[in-house]
Length: 159
Figure 1 (cartoon, helix red, strand yellow):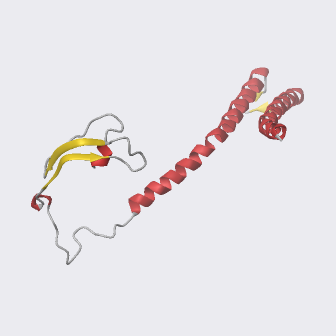
Figure 2 (spheres, one colour):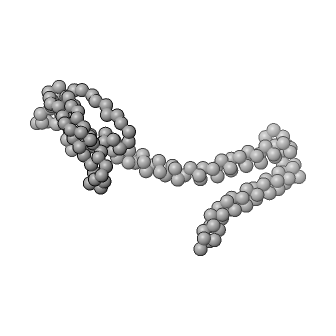
Figure 3 (spheres, rainbow, N blue to C red):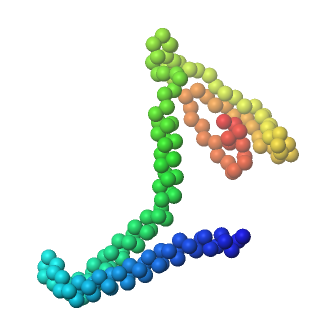
């Protein structure tokens, strides 16, 4: 079974390599055909330098188009992420600002504070590990407070 999977994975590069080689064969054939029959370009007859320039131009452009396939999955993921982002941006909240008949509360009018005094906390999934040990702090209205500490020290739990 694993051998079939490996064969499927090697099929794409094999086909690409075959097309690459066939392109070279055709480019040499067509260049020789043009030279043999004396075909004229816009600036005169085709010479070896013209044929090599055209061949490498086609080769580089073909390789560039081939490399686009590697980013197509990322483009698909970006489209999905963009859809989610625009859904959030376009979302109309249930509570509208300055809705008629509703009282508007200004930030300056809100007073109060939040106090923690000797708070201890542990999650039920790990009762032996205390996340908060005798935590005491006062959060006053209109003030900013920064919580710092190592990972797992209870910053998110406090919020």
